[in-house]
Image 1 (tube, rainbow, N blue to C red):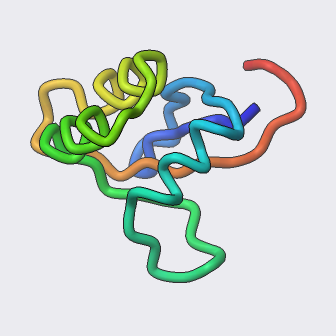
Image 2 (image 1 turned 60 degrees about the horizontal axis):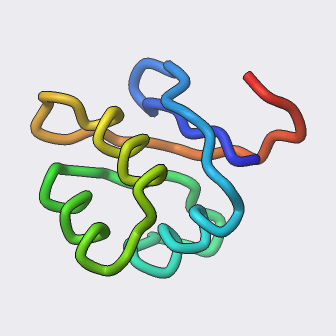
Amino acid sequence: MIRLYNNDTGEKIGEITDEQLQFLIDNLEEESLEDQDYYLQRGTVEMLAEKGADSRLLAVLRRAVGDREGVEIRWSRSSSGF
């Protein structure tokens, strides 16, 4: 599983699958091959929905953005649950 975190606070946002992570990698801009963070806004999440993101991934991303203008998230690979 892949854990998502709020990059500013370190708060755990949720877990996604390898396939969902690949969807993010394929559809979001990365600054380098080692990049493991993304800046999300509501519009970014809606763009991902239009591109076919599954409902579970969208729910995690919407929760991450919440009522803020945007949020920087990072991911890390985990072999266990929270």
